Amino acid sequence: MKVTRKDFLRIAAGSVVAAGTGTLVHALSGSAPATAATVGESKQRWGMVIDLRQCRQQGECDQCIRACHQTHNVPEVPNPAHEVKWIWNEPFAKVFPFQQSEYTRQADGGTLPVLCNHCASPSCVRVCPTKATWKRGDGIVMMDYHRCIGCRYCMAACPYGSRSFNYVDPRPHLRQVNPEVPTRSAGVVEKCDFCTARLAKGELPACVEACPQGAMVFGDLNDESSPVRQLLAERYSVQRQPHLGCGPSIFYLV
Ligand code: SF4
Ligand code: SF4
Image (cartoon, rainbow, N blue to C red; front, side, top):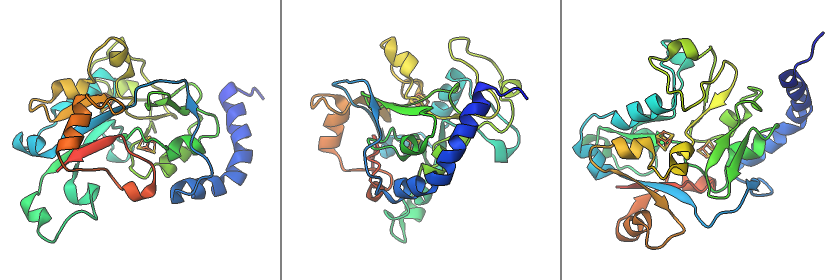
């Protein structure tokens, strides 16, 4: 029987699966023994601030989502159970279940964009048995589709539901293909990569550029003079489930 590299990694991961339950529980409980390994060094820590007032002014809007998904060849799979998403809209009450009063929903029945939080201490990275996902020195949590064996540990460990699994071949479900971004195959996990390819060219993330209200601001959280830091200094902000200890790099101005 021919054993492919993926098969080998899957078998190797089996032993981690047996021992890995404890790791996963640690990661989910926020009591993992060590911070997930970081690859490379950087003075920067990229982050994003989303101004919900500005976002609401646009009404029901999906321009950030369309820009992201077109840029990154994210498929539109008709079966909702097989949906793949890098950024999407969720109701406020679902995103911030502990930060609403009985009247919040009436005042704000709208939705807000959510994406990978590029966590400072990403539980997804800690549980991956093949190091297919890792954190860069600048805080961006990456995916290597060639190393991914589809075990979906990272999906179980992410408390934000930020990862999608390709249950089917995504390529037939692409309206158009951006040749600058690789397409994926069935059996791998994917998620927002903070537009690393665009950042390398000195461009802003596609969602930030597409937002008609300027509600999404991207920048260096380590730089006190950056627009993201200035906004965070001036306005009240919240992160998603900060008590879990993941340290999200996405901040919402409420
Ligand atoms: S939001 Fe989820 S997928 Fe993104 S870095 Fe944090 S734990 Fe990982
Ligand atoms: S930062 Fe880039 S990859 Fe992430 S949601 Fe925005 S457009 Fe998509």
